Length: 108
Picture (cartoon, rainbow, N blue to C red):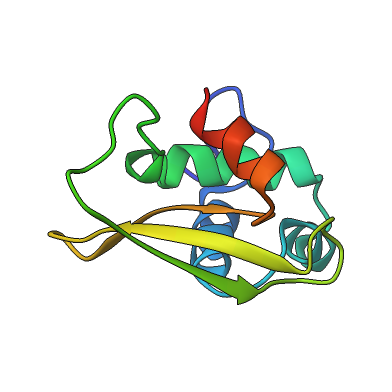
């Protein structure tokens, strides 16, 4: 099928968007490039990459943490990344490394 049921975006376009999502490009830029809404890009992302959602009810036995300079349009200048030490996989990235943001994140 060219277009899936209950969809207005072609399957080829969804595939192209999924490939773009693997790059370091904002959702807004992808939406503008393909002349679709940001929410449409988010739907493609949620459908294609549902396995990558963070399980917030579980933390591994040991975690690695680091901070890095992120994009300019967030509140803090530095972001916080943490990974599972054993599997060497990134668990999540928090936009702000400040204590109140991390406390809020880990209190969920």
